[in-house]
Amino acid sequence: MRSEICRRLGIEFPIFAFSHCRDVVAAVSKAGGFGVLGALTFTPEELETELAWIDKHVDGKPYGVDLVIPKKYVGREQGDLSKEALEAMVPQEIRDFLDGLLEAHEVPKLSDSDAAFVDSLLGWSASSGRAHLEVAMRHPIKLVVNALGPPPPDVIAPAHEAGVLVGALCGSVKHAVAQKEAGVDIIIASGTEAGGHTGEITSLVLTPQVVDAVAPTPVLTAGGIGSGRQMAAAMCMGAQGVWTGSIWLTTTESEDPPVIIEKLLAATSHDTLRSRCLTGKPARQLKTDYTMAWESEDAPKTLPMPLQFMAVADANNRIYKHSLTQHPTAGDLAGIAVGQVVGMMNKRRPAREIVRSFVDEYIETLEARHEELHAVLGE
Image 1 (cartoon, rainbow, N blue to C red):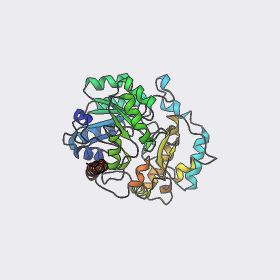
Image 2: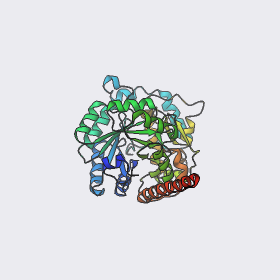
Image 3: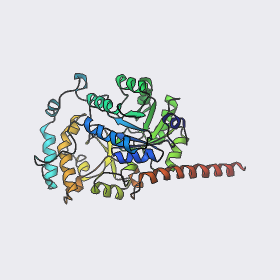
Image 4: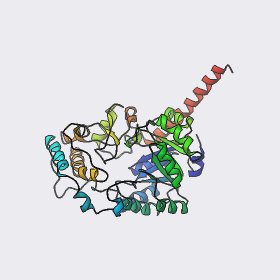
């Protein structure tokens, strides 16, 4: 279990936990894994607060930060368009569709005094991602990861100069090779089972192909990883560890609202779908009345990043706001990015307990296979 990546990062177990919740990040790192804070939902000022908190509560254990600097999005060639210019590109058809959907579920509009849960632009741009990186590099992080394509040279260079490793997610061998050529230190092979942005290839097929294509660069398997047995399978295929996200959504440390937690605990692996309705790029998320409405024949065509997220931001804020107040039908629309491993997430557990269960089951699985092999060989 203690692969080369453990030595390089100074961790006990190669279990990487992506989360937007600082409590989860700290808990996993303190348990011997490696917590990674998703920066996307924070402003630079908020990210500074979150990382300062982690620094104080992680007991000196290593952790990382996940950024989003997309390779392709509207406005990139122009050096990032203003929020106002981008919002002007959102067609009225989508606004009308969303207003009709929320009116049908009797979800009220937000008042002027209501605080937005997310900004319409978030971090879906190179300038926002670099702002997050600037904040992150002021803290003792050990790894910075880019979620949508190879990190640009001006991201990789300062990280390496500071002794920080760079990782990136991929959904195909082509993308994995491009990341290696860009200078990425750790490649995360993300199967279609994963939550959030994914490709179309399963992790069982993708992992060995990526391992062979980028060797000796270390590879982590992502997508469908929620137990020690699955971790053992990934490492038997050549991965040096696992990248996990969904499994931490229902931990006792999770800050997600009760309506989301209850849905996740009740969901099966059939209750997710890949859709462009969240960001404009394919992202696996929980099936809800909202996501299924985008699958209907009368739904408008989704927009490219970042326009799609900007188009749905107000609707998402309305759904979230009124879900918190136990609105009778807003909860039917409420959802979250989650992978097919949601079918294994049927009770709340502390993050430390999940790390320990991964380790124990990993060991038990390999010992059992070892005994079976000896029996087959007659030794």
